Image: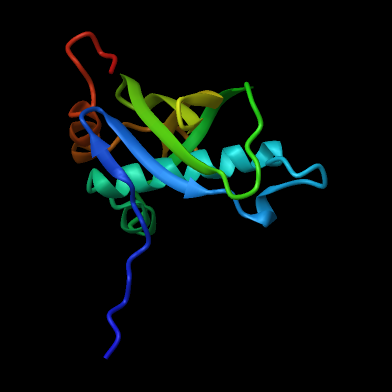
Length: 152
């Protein structure tokens, strides 16, 4: 019998989530560098895995009619290109926690080089699309990533 391998979730390192990935051919454009929109996909995957490690069950909460996170604000700065076969590390940190939203900072790194930086706010919205308070256990999970000043 073959044991099934689980997809990688990355790891929590103090208040930082680290999510490794590799650049595949499908990630690149015709010039051989990573297409800009793929950084957004990588950041989204890392945020999803962060939530999973925090014990936040998105699917059940959504299917139960409570709501889900939605990106409300996003800014991204591209600093250096990633290329085929590069090993990339996505770092995610919570920098602000409010009743209905969280601010996060994310970086894509190749070794010590920062390739891209993103700042975003995710808001918890109900099935009607309107903001609502995050479930208490979700706020508690994010609170463990915050330091005394509200930033990591």
